[in-house]
Image 1 (cartoon, rainbow, N blue to C red):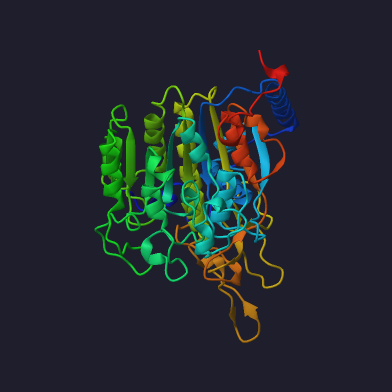
Image 2 (cartoon, rainbow, N blue to C red):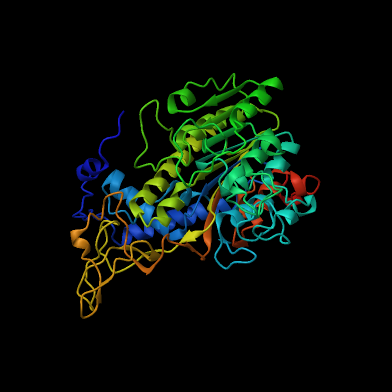
Amino acid sequence: MARVSYLVVLSLLGICAKARVFPVPEDEDSAYWHRLGWSDLQSAMDTATSNNWNVAKNVVFFLGDGMGITTSTAARIYKEQKRNGHSGEEGYLAWERFPHTALIKTYALDQQIPDSAATATAFFTGSKANKFTLGLDSSVFQDQCMASLNPSTWQTSVLTWAQKAGKHTGFVTTTRVTHATPAALYAHIPNRDWECDTKLGKPGHGCRDIAKQLVEDAPGRDINVIMGGGRFPMGASTGVPEKENCLRADRRNLTNEWLQKKQSQGWSAKYVQNTQQLLDTDTTKTDNLIGLFSDTHLDFETDRDLEPLGQPSLANMTSVAIKILSKNKQKGFFLMVEGGRIDHAMHNTEPLRALEEVLAFEDALTTALSILDLSETLLIVTADHSHVMTINGYANRGNNILGIGNSPSDIDSLPYTTLMFTNGIAYDHYWNGTQVTRPDVRKKRITEPGYKSLSAVPLKYETHGGEDVATYAIGPMSHMFHRMHEQSYVAHVIAFATCIGPYEENCARPKSTLL
């Protein structure tokens, strides 16, 4: 169906500029809380006695880029208010009901607050790295091209480990397929922005761009499923470029080269560019698939074209990827699913768009859960870093999470929204001749996709946050996530659970757990 005006949809739901209050459940007396506590106790006891120590055949790694705990909390409330008309605070996101949860420290080797290249390198390779670098060890810093050409600095990732174990591999993302998170699976490069040859510049002279590494080098060239955006850096676009686009000077169409190489190796390979082509794919007869659905990143979920010739949802891509990869009945597969545009909406200080991206990410997860066999699949959900959005004030229960708090400021007497940012683009403060003041949010369209929440420190783009993120897991060896961990620990759990990479010969389980 065609996308209906988002403002109309919000109005129909009662989530318009007036920010309605949602009803609070009526039966939350003390007996209710005691029943809920007893139910959670029973679940905890069941979990403690039912840990799955089997070797995982498959791993599906869900990464919500920038999906910090504050963002998840806001999305949980937003979900219930939007979909069910509930007050929202009592709800859950799907992964929040997984049996095992841990906290993850996100700092990079050279930064207290990380970027997505360093974080992805940590959780895909098992070792922390410096900012902006991908697949490199601690000796290489941003832009050090010559140092990065030394193979001894290269970190191998879970993708390499899985492929050497005979598993099929793939990734799907709402960003460019050459963007930081997916690139950490296959690239070794000291600057995440070197996605195509024209971005290398003088500092990158002698280095090979990320798109080229994806198509020409192991493990990228051996990936079975690749889906996301990024036709420009892959040399596959016929669109009109803009100044910021990464364009290939060598005029190579790396997408066609990938397709031809797969076919020359005897594989059934396919290239798709829209929803209809993706959903028409016969997964029983397709061994390798590349889908590029945009010249750059995919559109935000609020703006996505729902027509057959438009862009597929993350759930669409996830479903097709699992069906193709799961044909490896004997050895299994590794799949990474990234909700990458959560991060971009947060950088723009647009909470509604960010929360819609989280719900699209959740839809992809529930789609995966409907297909996967969790007795043999380790499923992990986490974030790479947080953002500086805060849930503030003292709004009443059931207040629209996108709305205005109950009490105005006792300094300037103006109201403020529940969701705000400590820095970012919407620093709309001004001098009225007597004092610094700020806009009256009652006069703003605060529940529309383009609304930018008020921020304190003026910046062109909002920054990441440095606090810990949560990790949720279910399936074989998911109980290995059990306390505070370093981010690099994630790769070790994946490898140990599947007996691949550094744990290929060292993944013995405690004898007391074996039948």
